[in-house]
Amino acid sequence: MAEFTHFNESGRARMVDVTAKNSTERVATAQARVFLQPETLEKIQRGKIAKGDVLSVAQVAAVMGAKKTPDLIPMCHPILLTSVDISFKEEPQPDREGRCSITITATAQTTGPTGVEMEAMTAASVAALTIYDMCKAVDRGMSFSDVCLLSKSGGKSGNYRREG
Image (cartoon, rainbow, N blue to C red; front, side, top):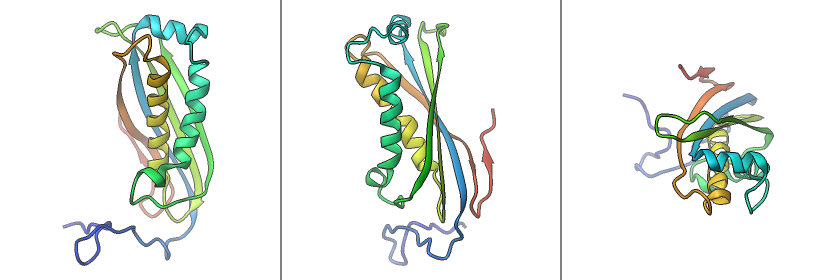
């Protein structure tokens, strides 16, 4: 049976001790998708959302979210991020439910004893929440899905790449 690393000998939660782990370059990429009405995507593209440039604000929010991850996720180590990059892919063709989408991709990097998966996933999630916040006046039916780790490299556990 696998050992749970986030519990002490008394069964209580603890932050994992990474003191003895080697510092290595670590990179993680995550994504999230926002589903919205075609009219909402068109307003974003034309700069017609009253709160401002939606994707620029979401990009800044994502970077800020990555930096605040240990404040939000109790057992995350505070780490020195060396890079956070956010990109957006707009899908203007409506799906079967008549919704368009924006796929957010977030990549976080560090050199240290622990990984950046949670920072990348937090960045993608915060970008999605920011898009919702900025567009909710015109589309309260927006939703999110596919928040997931796409890949990670570095560290003792090696590389991971999501299938499909």
